[in-house]
Length: 243
Image 1 (cartoon, rainbow, N blue to C red):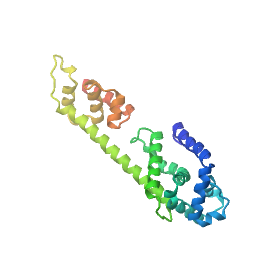
Image 2: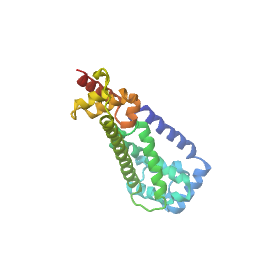
Image 3: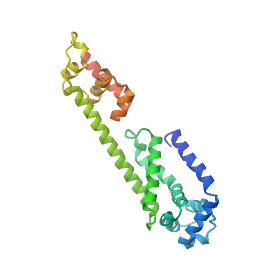
Image 4: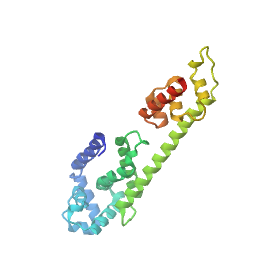
């Protein structure tokens, strides 16, 4: 696991599930699922907590039986909201694998914990959207769809931040150059004189800090570039244009 926050999120979901999975409502939902999937009646399942345990590899059910049970759970989801929650609980270990494949949104999401929260939310939304469908491979289909959905969101966020960064860099060259009594005091003039070879990240950081008065944190939120990268690039550009 990448962060303690991610641990806390999963622990919270597990604790919540331990409570709701053994309730009367859970037993009622389990009976609804049995009516849709008769093989479940032949098992020891009394509530959705038992159903989720049956979907674990160590339950004793074959891989085919578990796949059929997950498919039945998705198909029956519109009958009871707890069925969707049970399917989400089943998918949590797989979602950790999805998060790892997407590198926890590194460099494109705010932090791994918020990325995991968004991934869990996106998966639940998919479960609700697909509820009632009959998919033989419901679990892997959902995980793959969640991965694709989150990857698209990350790409869109990266594109938006890139546009913001480019706009900030462009603004440093489009704004009128102010000629002060001391030419060295004009950051805009110095950046313009540095030419196109100057690091655009460093130029944006220096311009944003010294001209626009933005903090590194504000620049990081605007551009999607880490504060450490911005600070290092700013120092390098400042060294270049001031020496």
